Image (cartoon, rainbow, N blue to C red; front, side, top):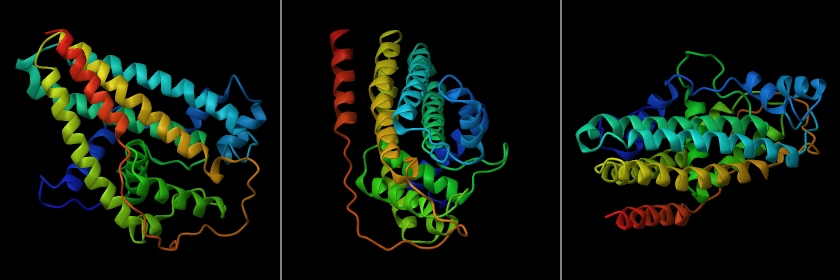
Length: 291
């Protein structure tokens, strides 16, 4: 995604944070290794092989089983990001310039980790094909839409459904580049990025205030992370699990990979961020009880 010269632009700010987080060690998930590990206790070797070579849906793995595996991954990532966030809250106000950017980066990094894991379980293609390579525009676009779903935006929900629909109707092993970078989905990507840039600034400020008091800041920061990350991950899981792409009964038609446009529909951009607001309120109350 092209970034503008105006650093205060919310869209550019979000893309900059996303790019930086994607380059952190351990953020990129190896699709083959993850699927093999995640499905090992539940599936036969043949099912795992086909899930890796094609998709879990093509391997006949039910959404119900994938939901169980997804919940395990969500619990693991939530515990990890909450612990790291609490640790970042320990130093106190003197360390704020260092801890706030680091906390935001690791938070976004863990959002990327769970987004990849859920995508691979629910039959999306490899998002980072080459380790060490830069993030291409299509990957940036679909990750932005995934984040939009996590934050509860209706337009991102619709856009992800359209992209999934395009892939489910074709034998597609990569993201539809044109639709995500030039088609009618692209404006939704840009609008989602701008909204997410504003939301991340608000969350970063809220966490910064909580870190001003050592120990108490750690409890509030870790609790706030837990209260926001968990519902966002579950929201993305629910949406991806409900798409035809994840359904084993769906029969993809043979043919070339479609990389074209989708029919334009005017979607409203209404955030459903009540859970995030409740989390902020809970964090403030928690801090007040410790005053």
